[in-house]
Length: 239
Image (cartoon, rainbow, N blue to C red; front, side, top):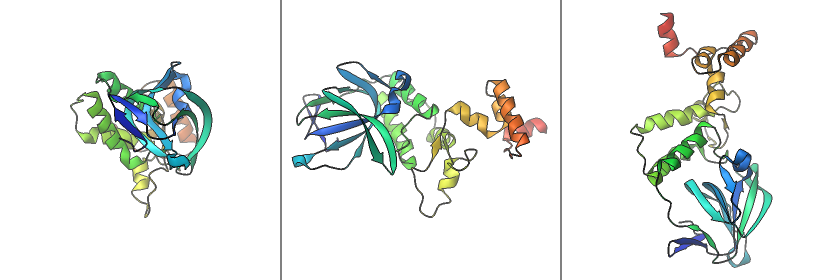
């Protein structure tokens, strides 16, 4: 449990005056966060700061990789700085001992499905450390009670392909990260799985979907002299 919160009788309360920051992009199209009037349903990867004895504490990640409900008392729109990145947020304010959320989360496949969608859509906050993502995913699986019956390397491969080199999105971020003397786990770009596949190569795009768009991308790559990687499947077909 975060030190900013405490549990009692199945509920979570604020230890001091506390603010919770929900990334505004979660509310886009009401896909990842919904204002229900009395509460906000959202992915629990949000930020939290308390003010013990009136002194401003640090902003920390509230690491709950599942859909949860935060009670609403006072709300406003703000901008905060995380890892030298400025993000727009919805700020929820809680007085000391105010009820914040329930302590328990019902298990179910919806929890695992939602988190998988966040990853495939590239919608997890870009202020999460790359090296922590796999642990967050396993924590989500534990909370949901779902077993995908695949080894961890499958999850790691998905993350490796969704997270891209910020200077050349045709390259995985892991390739860039591993070559740095002092790697920065926050210096990445993300995209949804469709955009990532389109950017990899013409062949990868054509066997995925929307063949017209993929062929157009391939023509542009050829015209611009972009070198495309050749996949093992493509080599087999050529052979």
